[in-house]
Image 1 (cartoon, rainbow, N blue to C red):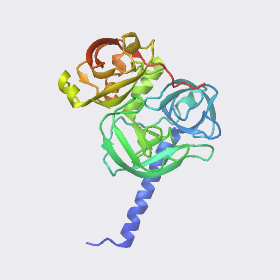
Image 2 (image 1 turned 30 degrees about the horizontal axis):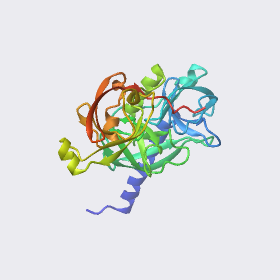
Image 3 (image 1 turned 45 degrees about the vertical axis):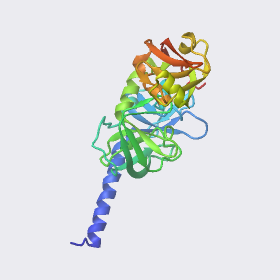
Length: 317
C-alpha cells in the first residue's frame, strides 16, 4: 500500500513537533558555563545546586559563572573534576530558586538501540539553547577511557557536537536526559557519558572531591617476546610491557621495578597491553598489594607492589 504525500508530510510534521517538545522539556536544565577564555561551554543542572559539565572545557577552578535558562547569572565553585571520565562538577551559589529551577529529567537507563533518534543540546551563550539532531551510531558495554576512567556503557553518536556543546545533554525523543555529551574522549567521534556514570562520578566528587584510581608510577609500552625466550621461560603470552620510565618515589619504583624490566603479569592476569594494567587499577585497588612478574635480563623475578593513588594532575590553575 502506497503512502500519500500528505500522509508523509503529516508524519514528518508530527515528528518535528515531537522533537521540538522534547527540546522544550529539557532546555531549562541546560546552562552556559563561563570557565574558559572567549567561548563558554555547556552544562546541565543535574541536581539541586549542582551543575555537571566536561573537564576538558572547564579550564578554571575559580571565578566561574553560570548563565541559567532564564538569563540570570549565578556564581559557581568547582566541587571536583575527573579527567578520567571527562566530567567536572560545580556547586551553584545563590538563592534556592536558582539552585532547583530546571533540574534535568535524567534517566539511568533507557532501551536505546543503534538508530534511535537523539538530540544534543547546548547553551553556548546568550542566544538560548541550540540542538543537534542525529542517531545513536553504536552501543557497547562498559569501557575504559584513555585516561583510565570507567564508563558504564558506550554511546557513540552520529551528530554534530558543535563548539560549546561539550558538557550539554544528550536527550531522547521524549526529552529525557540520557547523558552528557563530550568531544574529549574519542577522537573523531562524539560520545555521551551515560547518566549512570554521571551519577556515580557526581556522588564521588561531591563527597570526596576526586575519584581515586590506582597508580604504579611507571611508563610502559608493549614489546614482542621472542619465541625462543618464551619456550625457555615457559611464558604463555606473546608479548609483555617494557618499562620505559620509573618514578623513584612511586609504588613500582619503591618495589624495585627498573627501567628495562618487562612486566609479564600483575596478580594472575597477563599484561600484554597497557589496557590490561588499567583494568587492575580501579578505585578499589588503591592500597592493595599485588604480585608483579617481571623479566629482567632473561630471568623471571617476583615483586610485590602496593598500589598507590594516582596524583591529581588534572587540576588547572
